[in-house]
Image (cartoon, rainbow, N blue to C red; front, side):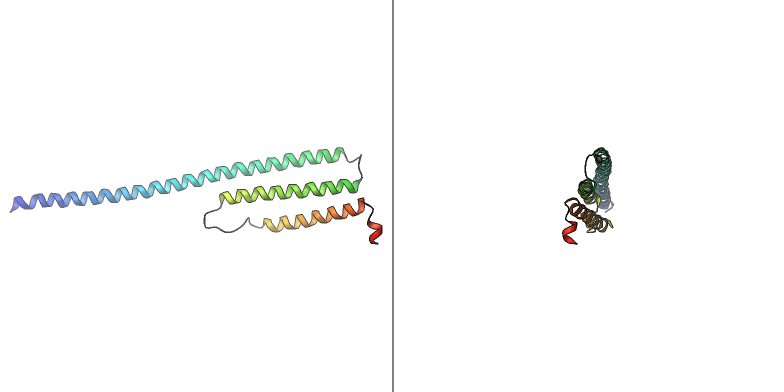
Length: 150
């Protein structure tokens, strides 16, 4: 009877060892999945950082070139016409920055997050309204239409 019990005990021990190995394999699989998610997240973060730097460089270089050309042509043109052009280019730069920031925000946000860029939409809308008002005012003044409205 002792001879029959020993093979069964070793089979039970082997079955227990197999269950332990399965649990460890499952834990390792979860660990690998978690590492893959972190790797994917860090890649998104690197892309977002590079995009932010690209947006800042584009804004500064475009802004500086625009300011330099505006100051160069200020003596040759009418101030109202120059103000119209400055307002239009300001609209373009602000909207370009907003589009770039939306793109970066779309990259770095989480899967279930439906929030937009925090507090920037209102600032962009106000800036667009103000620059459009400046453009229209300068256009009316530069074309001499002020007298017809008064």
